[in-house]
Image (cartoon, rainbow, N blue to C red; front, side, top):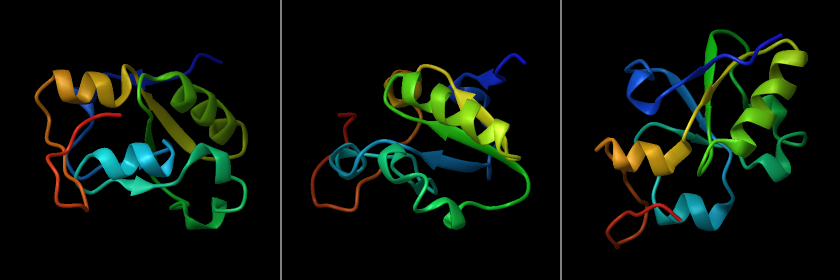
Length: 107
């Protein structure tokens, strides 16, 4: 089965966006409204994922998110990879935010 993927500017407004990058990457900058669920702790935090609706999975460049999307799809979720990741998100001029007091950036 081919993995469904979209460009960052094709993620619908209000979509369930799941950022699977590690904590330091998330802290540097992330998409507004995204949920942070690091790939390294996916199994232990699986219960935090919404159980219905499409999940848009993003990482820095699209590799980790593709792997996580494939795994989620194989386990009953509807996951869509955000190709190009947060690098492409930033290059597309989409908003970034941070929980800190620095200018958000992609790490």
